[in-house]
Image: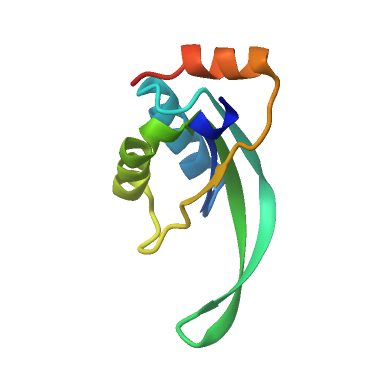
Length: 107
């Protein structure tokens, strides 16, 4: 059953974008829980240069079957031209949590 669920990561430039995107995803029931972490410092290569940026990390808990729609909503509403959208399989979790996650998302 855990393999039916994903943990999705994305970063945003500020708290306001993080809050807005979190609320949109939750209203659409594409994730059951979203943790907002930040500010964090990201260091990355962009256009042949090393860049640093203050960002906010979103950790979204969702169903594997919802990923295509979640990805579409994130891409459409994300302020970055190349947003980070990384999905990791949920290898193990307690069954009560997974039942809650299932109940709070829609297919």
